[in-house]
Amino acid sequence: MKRKVSVIFLILIISIIILLLTGISGKLKREDLMAERIKKLPEFTLPTLYNTSFSSSEIKEGPLLIVYFHPECEHCRYEVSELFRSSLPGSGIPVLLVSRAARDSVSVFLEALKYPETGEFITLIDTAFVFEDTFGNSVIPSSYLYDENLILIDALYGEYKIETILNRLKESE
Image (cartoon, rainbow, N blue to C red; front, side, top):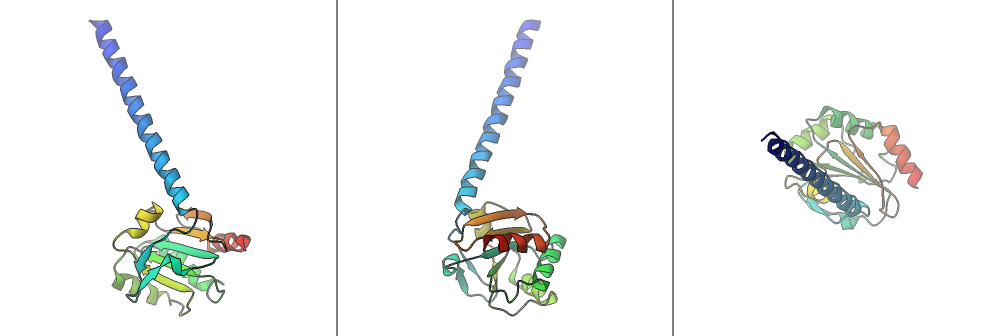
């Protein structure tokens, strides 16, 4: 009887280990597919802050910075405010600011940070979660840096110093 219980227990443990390994393997495959998908700037269309439509295909060359943020996130507030104070406004490098928050919330957030009125900054509203589906990420803030050929240089998840982001963009030029 004791031997039967030991065998059943062993089979149960092996089954659990196999299930865990299968789950981990599946997750790694999904992450690899997503990384491959964003290696070149993917196609996506989102509404802008001013309720017009913007497609990623409108960007023909880089470098390009995409910042995924939320107005209620402290780290996002810091990163975006530092971005506005940096040498990026006026540099000619396009910046896509993408948020899943409501349009009014994003507008108030940007006005409070003195949103630079340059054509380089394009704010996109993603209440349909198109960006997350395309880029496979919901970490905020996230920054995606693309080189002059719109090939991904780096995907930075979490808060980073603006100097780090700008240096990575300059390295790609």
